Image (cartoon, rainbow, N blue to C red; front, side, top):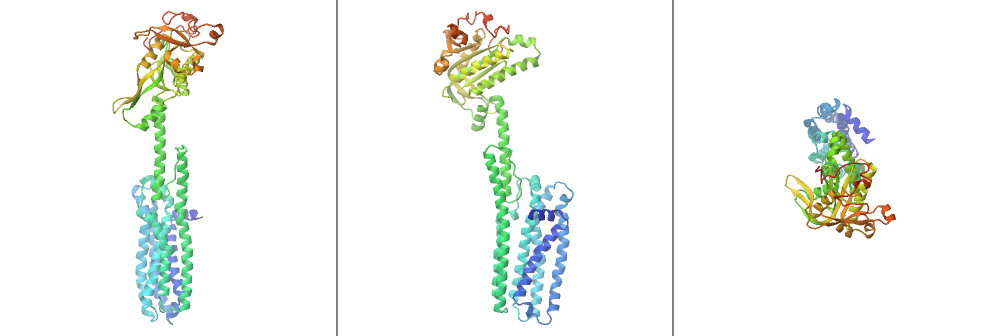
Length: 533
């Protein structure tokens, strides 16, 4: 209901005037009731009617002036609202100053009235204390001004999201939590108690009148205090509860959270900060996803965590290299987009098989890919996942029937880290294991099973995985002084017939490729690593 009344007061042309009138009448009502209960009017004598008429002239004039100014303020401060448009920055800043401006105007209208009323009452009756009379009207003026401030401040809350959208994270000293607490304390505690002190100190009032007035002021203080404190507590507790829920959602990974900024106090700044946090996390996640598509999620996370420093480690890793056989012939016979589509389907297989086995696709090199197991995330066993990934890639490529490939897997110590400059970095792995994997890939294109693995990888794998691999033969790899013992996986049919992995014939340089299930589908020629046809 309060929200409905607030919206009405904000949208109606008479809304602000009604608020100002209500606040001033509340203060005037407290003063009149206090004077009545204290027996003040009974001491005015026979000319009380004439006295009240004279005293009432200024309040009537001030009342009319206040209505006129409130109507003018409604147009001056909320003209943009009537025109159904967003406020300009100057209009938004004026809205924030409205509670203070209205409150100061209320005090400016009350002060002359206080002086006039106190002077008239003190001169028209001999049984009134001038200080007491002036104090009662002065405290009533401050009560009216404080109530006006709280109501007008509450009235502008619905406009704060628009104001925040224009000015961003902004605040005004008058809307701070501290100011609201002090004003609420003044309305609910300080001013009623001050009035009570004045009444009890009035020497002209009889004891029953003072007691009756004290009870009245105490009741007013309790009622107004409960109401004002409730509003203050709700204005703090409700947005804080909303913020707590939003922060919990962000903690749970929901970066789409947004909180409506409903205040220009410290709470409003906190609401804006939560929204900024959500946007920052969302942008970070977008960058992580975009960056991860280029360099891998693990490398992206590492870069976002460590920043721009050139860092790296020497790691024991297993390197898997996969390359397309006959890529030059294929690219010549196919339209570019069709060839790229084939490569993308191959690389999708490579990425899925590598990431499912906790590896990293470090880079794509034309029609080839280098995959690393054990960096940047260390693995207790990086050989077994590499062998599983190699088999899966080979099997899915064979099932697709589009391309012929070779796969080489080697193991050794490499540098895994960032290379480059402060303006351009790349995560890479450098070491003999990478070179050996590339050489094995070249030779694997002529092997029936299309996979060659170094002995170090087999030795480091689990016993269950080793059982599926057999020694193919020793091959002289380019650039190496000694022949390398090469292993390939064992076909289930070979195991049933008791054949060795090399029984299907030939070394890598001279084997009969027609026995290969892959080369029966493709008549591709052997090429070099990384598309060196």
